Image (cartoon, rainbow, N blue to C red; front, side):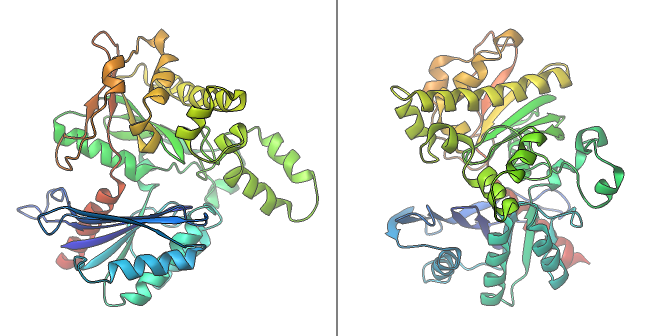
Amino acid sequence: MQILVINSGSSSIKFSIFEALAPPGGDAPTVTPRSLFEGALSDIGEAESTLTTHATSTGAEKSAAKKVGIHGAQQAIDEVLKVVSGSGVPAFEAVGYRVVHPGPKLREHVRITDEVMGDLEAASEFAPLHDPEAVQMIRAFMARFPKLPHYACFDTVFHQTMPADASTYALPPEYAARGVRRYGFHGLSCESIVRQLKRAGEVPRRMVIAHLGSGCSVTALVDGRSVDTTMGLTPTGGVVMGTRSGDLDPGLVLYLLREGKGDRVTEVEALLNRRSGLVALSGMENDVKAIRAAAETNARATLALKIFTRSVTKAMGGFSWLLGGLDAIVFAGGIGEHDPQTRAEVVGGLGALGVSLDALLNLNLRRAKDEVGAGGIQPISSQDSATAVLVVPAREDQMIAVHVEEMARQEARS
């Protein structure tokens, strides 16, 4: 089965076509999907957006990149539709979408119906940075490909294993009845990492996964199952992020709502989701590489990075205490996979727990291309470290293809 996967973010759209094969016997997990075509439209809303594509289905890899003038969500959707409908792009039989927040009603990955679309639209209030664009994307693709099955895969599903003491807020119970709880996010990333570790032969019993990118979270796992995570009701909470504040004193949020005039809820929402985090602390764009370069002479950039890495270290230290120690720390996401200095600074704060890096392994991390098995798992801890430290690529899109194939197979049997 060939599946188009759409992964839309606040300023980018990734799209991939996978060949996902059912395993012999039909009931085992899906064979690892093989990438046939990959593309990304990045920097949407900036002066120039970049469209990149990479095809592998012809036997010889072929890549292309070009600048395109994309200034809004609908233009971006139209551009992606044009690419995936064009000649030379592999055909697909189903479409799967990453949806950050399903709201309180949807608790599993699901085939999209009119009722599901209504639930997704209602859920947009929980993730205003991501869900509205995802809903717009889904409607456009369902209109273009009405005969294909369409599926929504949620970041929250992986965190359904969190116990009540990790998912419940200290609020009157009527709020929990309305869906106010800690959902957790980056679940597809975490699940893809656990899947890779399983295929390599072993999942560390007590583990934390730091997914560090534009959005950042730290998740605690026992035997590959989520037991706690830093994000809560929305993807705004937790550790410091690129444009998001992370955790704040609730009294500060009330202060922000009281000050000023006009629609304060909309203004504060934009402040906490789009104008906070590293961009607010550094006064620069949301680019850790540029902030690091500026930190050599810029005190604001230096402080921004210290606050960011400190928040991640604090989360890891707290989870280590919760789990009674850590067998492994995993770094993933754009920053986690590609910024050795962030990894070094985060782990440097865990020296009291006996965690240490091999400096050469950390700096000279190879760029693994293997999409099957353990090829992407790279140890960077020192030989005497009490905890293994690994870099593992987040393969959210591949995980979506796995779930879509499994749902389609179940439907075919029913």
